[in-house]
Image (tube, rainbow, N blue to C red; front, side, top):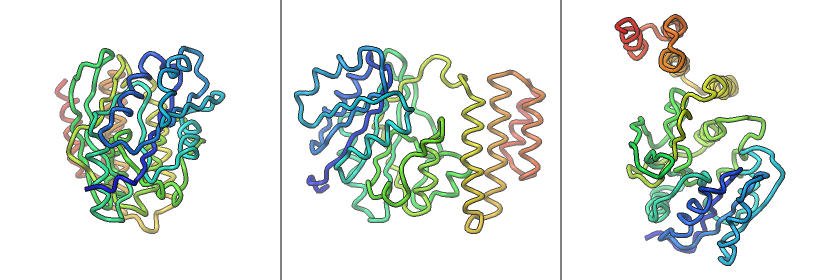
Length: 294
């Protein structure tokens, strides 16, 4: 059994999510693992978020912090600094935890003191909370730096993190506009193991058009993070893995051109770029064949 003396700090960074925020907070309060504190960091909301939180403030475990709008990285870092727990967990303000999430994940840390992050599957839900599907991702456990370089295999918001990880590798990078989880996982992976629990513990709300909105900016940010990490750690990274990571990156770019922008020429050129890094990369060839058959 997990030592119930271990305090878990739950951080909910929010901005104008007052409609869904109470559901996120309630799902944290409803945890079967009871030794928790909740830090809601309101990043300058102008909606009813503050009013919606008043019903929870009688619970001494719930803490509400308001700050001027500064971005999600600063909001989450504020939550980490306010936290007293041995472990840190996050919920997006429009998402929901399953009641036994922490009860299932915390015992996994007892398998090894090298484990810094425990993450799980998640279920995708729509605006009304109806479950749509469970994404199939090539999850991995142990030393996963190479896995992360090729693809972000960690379903970010499902993660529970030892607080000491932040003390060792730093907090979220406040200069990044997005993909802050990916950057953090790469840094943590150099010093700690990851553990994947094959269970759904988190419901992620997918908004209409979310996957196609601003995809170029997300891609460029992820590419920048990967390139920065490779440059900083090229002396310890396998050259073949680096090439595969770049190949996979350009296959992903090509898929965005093909599926979102419907631009076959740009998609084809991206797949060719992938093959320059790894000529026998089967995923690139599969996408080329699929593109030619359309």
